[in-house]
Image: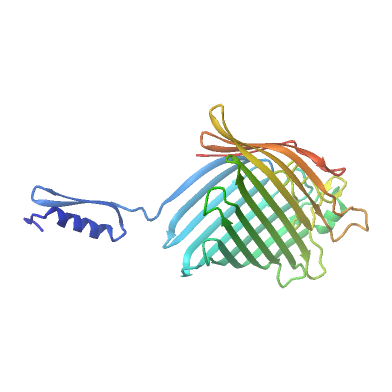
Length: 378
């Protein structure tokens, strides 16, 4: 009040009261002449960013990205938009997420994904759009369960007339139908002491094209572990697997099947293994790839902290519903590779490099000796 001399403890109490509202980042009160000045800095309750990036990954080459994210885009709701593109693939993703939407452990989200691909090493194009609202239950900090019910529309088109007869059979117009997704994620370890085992598991199951003659069951698994030892060493293990099958006696299509390679199977090119007809990679209804790697901190090289690793990977992609009367070999054939990895940062840009060679391969496989990935953001 004008003309009132406040004691220091009274000014402090007023500051504490204003800070307790949770609206201000800082509060300062001081007399100036006959007035009391209240200087406040409000908390930015809608932090966000717009970002551009250029990345290189072995599976897709050079990729440009534009992204936007905003906390409290709507009250209590996080929003994000990401556009990625190169000469072969264009993708758009939009996400909304509201934590504690229905209770302290029950969240709500909406995903929208659109993708179009014309890959140079395939004789067909694909396009798809899907939208999915979902619930996420997080009973504790380690576990997460998701249930989504969405709609997908996709097609496989522009199959080259000289392509495999199987791909020509699989060409299709728009397939548009609802789908169901169930996901479970669990991670643990590593909290009690340095050197403790850390592990993670993710399971995803999709029921695609519900209510149509093209219904599919699609299951995917990823498991990982990290065990530090000997001070500067780490043992890493990863298993990735998937299986897709028709539920109404229908066959899968190339756009449904799995194509491990490059970063998902080092030593082999993108879409480098699996059933083959002539020069056409057909993918497999099932795949399994396991990796074991020992990493070590090797100090600085050219003033850059570095980690080096030695890895071995093994697996396969196999299984088709139609082998053209036995003309296509879709059996399991083990592939294996070994190599060296190197990870470091250049001007805050993470860089990952590996050199790999196949230990076991099948005639017709496409190999890739060097892999590189980095992302520069600005």
